[in-house]
Length: 121
Image: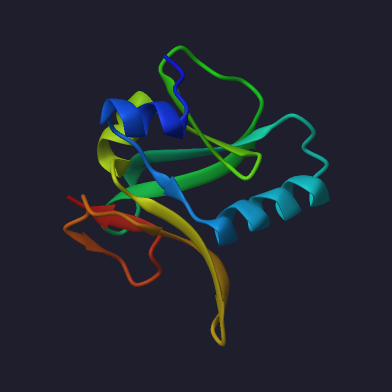
């Protein structure tokens, strides 16, 4: 079941927020990798130093349980199981003196590791 962020806001269902900064960076990376019609898939899997880990990769195949979010023409897809763990999360891209990275601010995470790539609930 694919839904847009607007549809979810109206229906009050689960969702994520993609910041303007993240959308710009996804667009740049997509161009660099010549990803064409691909979208960014965000997933959660078991592993990492805190129990769950985030995965980000370009994909061009959607499944029936994917949820679609769009910001400034950039499409982000999250599968249904991962969305349970990411509901309400903000996907951001931050550049500072320590470097540049995607950051996921996940309200469902009880704790996360120092690098921010894994979390526990």
